[in-house]
Length: 444
Image 1: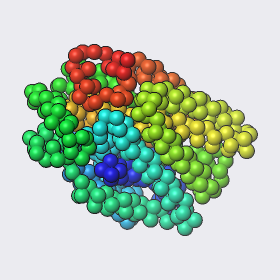
Image 2: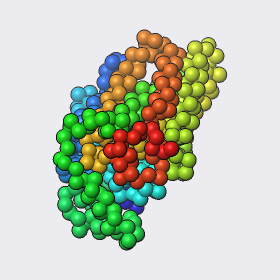
Image 3: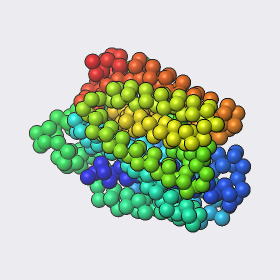
Image 4: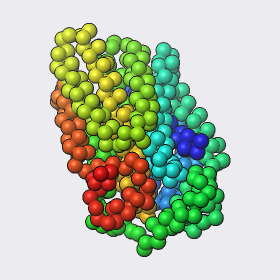
């Protein structure tokens, strides 16, 4: 229940990133946006996400995971209502930046919080609830876009984002904080009470001792992130963040209706309806990933998912290269996008967020996760802000082939650097690093 409530932050993440895909079709007409201005409106939320992620580690370590999630839910509400009331592009961009700050902070605090209240054998599935809620939020945003498309009511598309934010505030007020954070603040008695909810009575003392030992190391600084034994985990987190974005996922999330219009879906409503189908597949395959992640492990899902992404991107590029076949193009483009989103949802989608909540030592986890999150949102912003430009400069086919080539690089990165964390406690992962063992050998 605790994990599900915290994962509502993921629902907000998904809704507020996905809703722009339909809304932008009407915003660009109302405000007569150029392609560059359109990219600016779409990527404004990502600028905010980069800013939020940059400070999220320090905020979560100082104020606690629970308190920060409540504060971000309030910010989500303000940004959603402000966006719906925007009288001009400037106000809309400002409010979208506020929403982005909330997304940037909560996108790492939510999985961090869930990982720290989860037993090792359930951690993969519980942390992946956050990714499931992200995909559900995207589907809900597409559904809202579709229902309001006929009346062109893009303001209501934004305003409805305040509803889950208010539910998250109410839910988090009723929950407890992370036991690991409580122990870091020497609130041992409270931490014991929390641990009694998530493990057997006889395991509480040993768990408190393990957490306390991992915190007993000297006070950390940003320089500690560059220590030789920490560096492999830092590389894995930043590398997965890079490949999650440069393989093109958010060109699909933000611009799916636009892509379908390129493929021959003539009306806004038809393009949004096709996008809704993509969102449903995203949710369904994320559920499959949650079921598999603690059974088959993280790396097999990464390999299968990224292989599917590579193939579907290559086929999508080929479809646009043969654009004279308009009816065939529509079918092939839609199927390619569906296979791509399914492959992402079973691999890179949930496993990046899960992995960065697992691989970092407790003492520096907040700062290390914030670096991975900043990297993720930074490349997200770059891709979103240049997608239409890439389409104009390289052409549709070459743009998707570029993403396919980068997906091949992601497969190689996962093979050589990414560990298998299935079934290992957070403390065991930390001990493995401290003994200067190769992170890749963790699961062998």
